[in-house]
Length: 403
Ligand code: ADP
Image 1 (cartoon, rainbow, N blue to C red):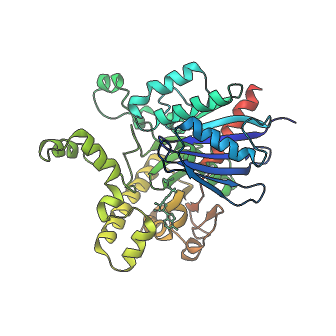
Image 2: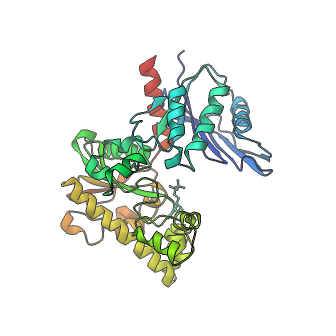
Image 3: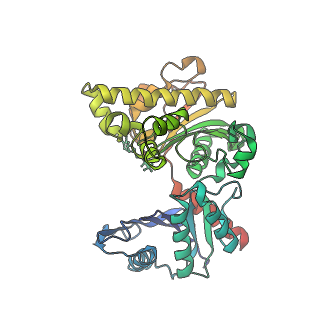
């Protein structure tokens, strides 16, 4: 029997999220999360999905990523799914920044590790943690293919006109400053799933994908290839997010430094952690914001309106970039669940062929679905994202090709 299981690892600086999938049928065997690695209050939550078992929680000290992965392996082993199993075909790692070098999923070797490391200056928060996860997994199963799947890869098809900032070319090149985009695994998955929902090949359709989670980004996808996306050198650019400002005049930063006396580190924290919805109204959960709006809260109303205004600007911009649009797809926590956001984002865009059917929009479901009126020129879709499945699919396809 050939190995068909793929373990997907998403390693953060103090957490590891994981899922074990069987690619024979794409089914999930187990999933879980280790949090607060390196603290006394580390926590592991493991959910076996094949055995129908209950979630198991454990807390105590998990000193580092190696101990975390060992603990995960022990939990998996209780259901006969341990990392030493011959049925494990590969480990797929989410890597946030692949720069221009990585346009596809890649089997990790020394050179790949070195390149991911070289990209740390443009992804100081994410790439070091991703590297730790890969190195730990390699030490645990050195015989197994370890595949890096990059958040940036889907966006490497952007033309230079979209990827370049209009700044001095020499300076930009010296510091590798350009628009890379993120959430690529989600944009790839959702744009393909949207084409499927329309019953058409991805090559035939133009889609605007709105990934609205705590982080949020939009992309313009022409015939299955990304031609523009809203995040840039870092995930700060673009839409209003849970805690990030998205687009702003770069001179705000000079002003805060010169007039506000703030340090670069303080401004970084302000724009990435204390802005967006949380900066505007103190909440970053769209459920809470909607509840407050319904109660007549002014700050929540303004935060919602700013969020929607920005979203609408990107829909319009990407409509113009694509020329013709077959569908707009909403995904991630807000996009999949917040009907008022979807309704407001396309309100008044009937002349662009865009509309939402109130009854369809109100339906709650985990399935991909259309929420536009039957005769709509441009379809509006809700397509739940599945980044783990996409990472596992890409990882498995690569190891099968090499086999
Ligand atoms: P991320 O992966 O970026 O952390 P998610 O895609 O899980 O985020 O999205 C999380 C966000 O989704 C929450 O902050 C919340 O604003 C929003 N969300 C989740 N469920 C709902 C819901 N039922 N209604 C409205 N918003 C929701």
